[in-house]
Length: 208
View 1 (cartoon, rainbow, N blue to C red):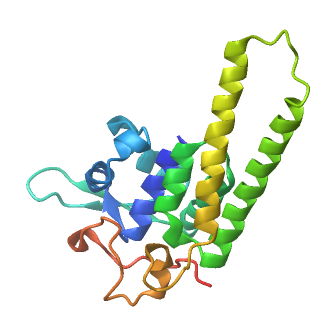
View 2 (cartoon, rainbow, N blue to C red):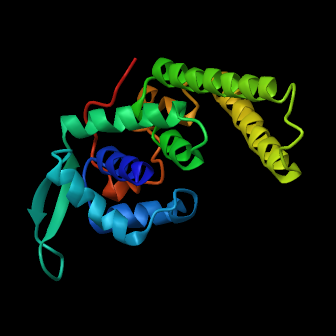
View 3 (cartoon, rainbow, N blue to C red):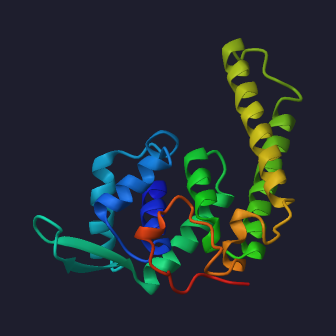
């Protein structure tokens, strides 16, 4: 649910405002139903829940050929929530869905802030791997082989995650990289999949 919430809040903010179907279309174009495990119904529910929590405002607009549509815009509280969720996704280990969502929302963080939370992820993973290695120095002979295999599988995943996190933390965050979105001019700003026709200029994106 946190990944869905982060992505929906982020798309609404980065597009400057969006209707529910626009949010759904955007996430589908990203393939988020696969890597973020988002269900179509939750996409429509999330903006309404965000509005109830005062993370979005709601604005009724006339439909092109039908009933009124609701335009959602992020509030200051909503923008702060995006930042906190993105930070959490970067440092939370063993949650690839949340990590993917956080990476998608890297434009909401300053480069310094993002690297700091990735480095926290690195430290957590290194501590977990050290703890496991120490625990297996004198393994209990009564532990079944399939349990040992499972532990090694977990360690392998953790090592892969650690390698990726270190790579992220060492990236050169120059103006040409997508996660330095805030360093681009409005004219050259990357779209992040959001069509220009659907974009409104977002406000209060965190800067360094």
